[in-house]
Length: 477
Ligand code: ATP
Ligand code: MG
Image (cartoon, rainbow, N blue to C red; front, side):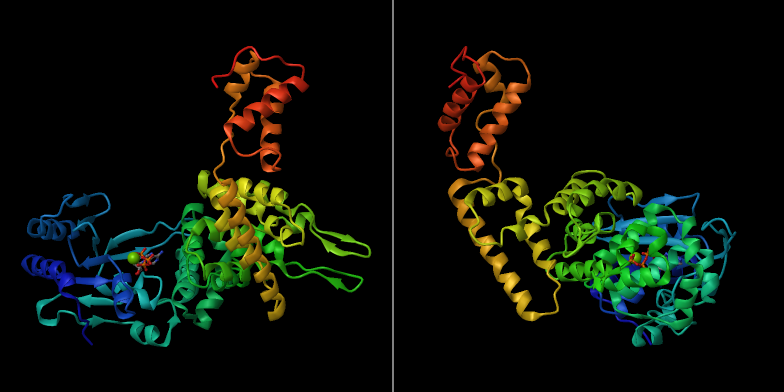
């Protein structure tokens, strides 16, 4: 079987084939590029393996392609990289044979044949190679029946699974990630290998684990991966807080829902409407504090009071533990976890404009994300119930739109700043400044005063008077 390439792909492939011929190097295109090509998935990362000096090959390819920036040669690793036309990542490496020690995923590497190189790959579908030799250009080299596994949608290791996963436990995460991204089944022996080696994940750096976790979360149906991680025993090692949601308790015949599978369903629901990784993380974490806040109240059943607040506090800890960035993404996730019950409380009758303004003010630019999360949080099996909740949320959205049009709360900045308050009353930074600021905000959100400078200034003067303050200047009015 021979693979067909587009003319754009031929523009660099032909140069690699030509250089390989000139140097007399047996050269192949391998791994993810071949897999994705056969699956008709678009891909821009191409890995070349040659039996011999990959640096010489890359240098010769660069001489004809003249890439900008110039070729990068990594002499210590024997690898090279060319970024071609700003979009194609061409990686060059010599065929290698690997042997592993038990305490590290860094193998001892020696030069090898193409078969050696294919054997060290994680899955048969990732071990496919395409020859670039002029007499067999495009021919598939497939010693482990990877093509058949690709057609049957099967993930299987080329070597005995226990060895493959023990050598490099990151491959367990990769296998589950591919099962999630591609919708492939993990072959039984391979699955048993993952379950048996799950504990080995401890030798993998958190960054690499989290990279795979993020790829799982970005798949169309992320629940597939989280469920596989759970059932293999990996999840309790890499993210125990999520596994704690699994425990359901019964008292007096009252159970509560399984919050682990509920969370997975929320995540899938949400993933139909957004590709935003951080919003998806908010779904993963929205109920994370339910185990800590769970109480059984006689006559009431199970309650989880305050789980949004405790959950919000857990976000920075979990981000630190998973080595996720502690920046505005973390603050966004925390905010959504903290606010995720607020829109529900607005679906009751007789909701005041003031309550709507407060939600708009607190959610700000993240209002739409919050509503997506809340809508995804409806996981009842009862269709009628779901539709009723959804139409309630539709009403909340409409009310919010009306109030926002009228009052423009979302990005509201108080027209009277602390500076102005201090100038007006001749104060230095002190408690009364904060009191006046807060009461101004409340007056505005409660609709006591309109959202204008003049109204706020008048209000400030009155509030000052109440506090026994006298204006010393007009405050730059
Ligand atoms: P993606 O690019 O979507 O992450 P990929 O399979 O292309 O998936 P890369 O990291 O680009 O992953 O690696 C390219 C190839 O290198 C893989 O297809 C596989 O053959 C091999 N490979 C990568 N990581 C490993 C690993 N941990 N163990 C064995 N082989 C690996
Ligand atoms: Mg790749």
